[in-house]
Length: 520
Image (cartoon, rainbow, N blue to C red; front, side, top):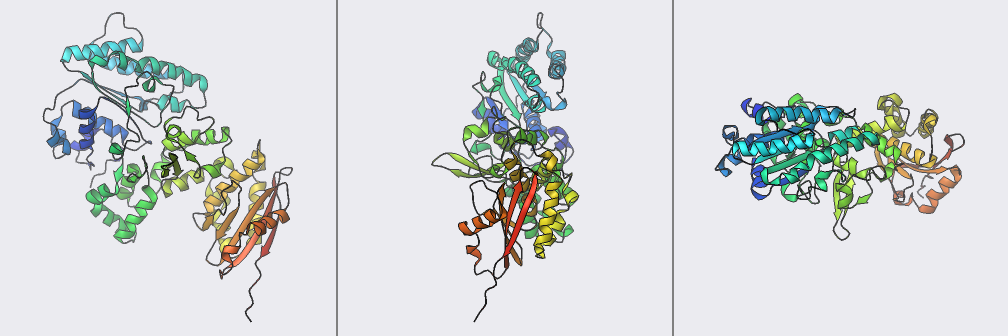
């Protein structure tokens, strides 16, 4: 099996004999039922290959579609002029980067269709190319724009540069509305949806299919597609990892499935990680390792976001689809970037519950947060293994001393809201522990109350700021956190911890063991 890892050109994929999961029926449906579309999907989810497939389709390259659904669906195979703009090829760090990229593509199109007199600005030249392409070929134009938002994403943190790019994009894309009579089909992809770009204001005739139930499968791989196309390869992966085929399917699902782009929709596998795993026969964090979420973490810090709310907040459709207020609420851009996905839906109040899509994303994102919210350069740097082993052995005093050292190493980062800082560091810390032992929250009111379970022990933690360890222990009693474990044979410890804002670290802790039950 030849896996199309890193191959985004449909013609190369088909002529090279690579695996292709057939999405052409959906392309046929799009072009036959509408004219302008927008699709948002995370990076490395197959958007560029989808655009390339559309390009081959509208260029009438019937031979590339042999054996695919569109071979039977399409009867005409008309050749249309196609203007394909890929904005994923530049860095967009300087003011002229976008204009230079547009100019490069305009020169390429003008070499085919010519340039009109008086056409100076990118928008004027774009309008001229569209009109001439239609008049010269006798067919309306197909416009395909891939990763339209790359300039905006790369300029997050630089408002002046972003405003400059936004202005250029507004003028350029608005041409598609003025030249509508010359256009057959338009399709735009990106990671995010920016409300202030003319694609979504001036071009109100674009249909956003990002959450359309008819097109949730247009990028990525479904469970059914995995079984239908790659069952033998999964069996080979199972053998290489000493798993049964059923265990291998379950592990693939845990690590790479779980993306939902609509409530109650089929889960989607991340194609990049899935294909890399099948190719290398090794389970790893392929998608996460190709692009760290630096700008997302910057947004979380800038907005003073409580990390406890990452997988607890409920949001509306408008929040998910518009990142115009990301400085105040970064959840929308985190969702659209693929680090969160839809986990549930409240039909009555029309609110979505978000969560991590799979283990690869959850573990990778948590590890990255650990480097950003603490002094730890990596998970191994603060040796999560020792924390886990101490909990499993009941060495709670050693665990707390190690934890005290962790905060002592990180006090230099405490700025602004100290309570939020402590909460966020604890969130990351216990999230990392949760990949090896059972960690749960007994309450949902935002406090960092935690219960950690191992095979032999139960630990109930309560954390306070500028109070006392005794008050923390008293809350465990008042809230009855230990009651559900009254009959549990495991040894139970109650740990009250107080943080000192003056010392900017753990001030004190106290440990109380549940009294042993004596049978008479």
